[in-house]
Amino acid sequence: KVLAIAVNPTACSGCATCVNICPEAALENVPQTEDLVAQYRRSWKVMMSLPELTFEQLRDVVTAEEPETMMRYLLRRKIYHTLPGGDEAFPGSGARTAIHLLLAAVEAEMQPRFETLQQQIGERISKLEARIQGKLDSAVKINDFDEFSKRLSRVEAGAAESGEVLALLNDKPGRAKIEKQHLKLLNEALSALKLLPVKYNELGAGGRTRMVLLLGNQGKFFWSSTYPYNPFAAPWMNYAGDNIAAASRGVFGGITAQMAETFRQLRKADLLLEDAYQPAQHDAMLNGLSWEDFSSDERAACPPVIAILDDVTLAGQQIGGLAEILSGTLPLKIAVINTLDDVVEASGKAALGWMA
Image 1 (tube, one colour):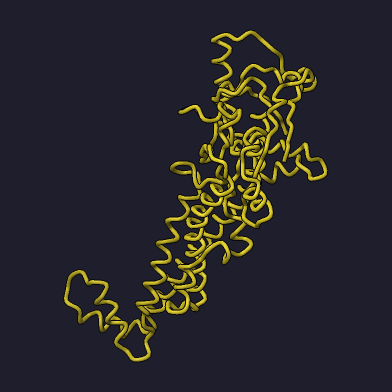
Image 2 (cartoon, rainbow, N blue to C red):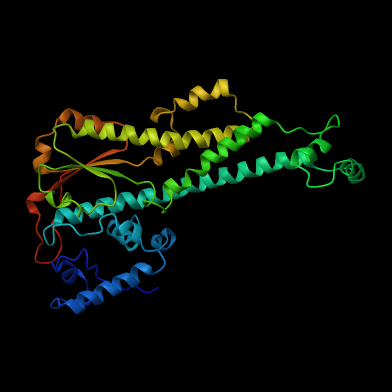
């Protein structure tokens, strides 16, 4: 295995933190020139074109016994780019580094869950296709080819419609019939499931988000909301009120409504595959699906809402709302960062003062 270092010219602010902290003089400060920046951009482009690291490869170098190794998840591009750069944070900003590590940790946790959900959707699609094909195959199976040939010879010359051929097969008593209503339900479920993969894969706008962010914008996060150069890859919103807890619950309500549609289609597919689906019995339950009805796996697949505050913004929040979030079961997280020490020490290590 080879570990190579490439400087991201978009994110680098020249703070020299990486130079000071990397061992064995792996990096050095050099004067900035146009040619050097162009070279860095080419190197970064090559690095981004290489095959993505898998979680299996990363688990070889990440261990729970050594929490500091969790940062190695940043070697995976999809995790590193939770905060890609281009913002106006101060060089060596400890708050920015802390937020990057926070988002990377959430992304590293959620990506495997989303991959599992995508696999489940793909499995249901394959099973529904096989069930539909099986029903059609059983309905048109030919047991007596001589008899079928005689019947076919009585059809007028020219191209025969599929309905005419099916009529030749199905006029005997006891012949397997196609259950039109059940076949229609299977096909509708298949069509609905086939719309889901594009929401979770990397096509279009990048797939469904793994988290949603709320920023308390009364503090020192000005660098995170300068349009159009905000640094976040996940959906985010600025919040200037005193009840960010209520705003978080509202945002999460929208998330669960969207995720409920996915789980509804998966559950309906399972019922159809088990020949257990009864519209009168199951439709009301499926249509009313909510967070309280989600299984543990379904809850784990719901993107969390993360409220990011600094010490200044925290002081203006309603404590009761924050306490309710912290004591509840919803995936609503609050990160409070101490920006009073938003500096870089001489050793090059960012002073990341986590308050909560």
